[in-house]
Image (tube, rainbow, N blue to C red; front, side):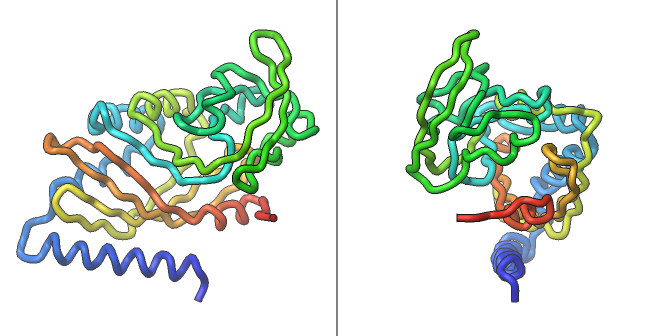
Length: 242
């Protein structure tokens, strides 16, 4: 049995046990309707996604992406083939060195261009230093950043900003809800996501299990997901090497 199959089976079993505890002799949790609407809005388009998050996420809510090893910064891959920092993740190695607006020119001796944005050596062994040249306010600077483990959490404000900066015309995500289970203020949902890689335009499919936590006002105050990241990489032509 493949590891991703074991992963999904284990999580499904866990969710089923949670569901039995939460629904035995009770009506369905009303928070499930909010999660269903959240997922449907995400699939519908940028405008719908923005409106739903604005309405149903708590102002102090947090959105957690997948953890990874790297620098900890975001950039727009569709920005004319340039790598310009849009934001750094709080507490990451990048947050101590980089500023929004910094443009990467060279990474570990490789000149940055539109054809290699997805192949630069930001990922790799934790603690290993990566040398780069950036441009800040029209001036070139040499920097060195040691890779670290990135928790990748975003506030509601940051999440809305990133959704606003996305390309509405390229909104291709399709999401199927396979199972949704809950207890009290926690909702788990298992979905199948079909999307297209922003860097090379290749389609991919991934199973995702997400956990939504609600506050007393019925607003989402935390969202976190676990997905088949390596499977996505393999479908879109990338390799994982050491």
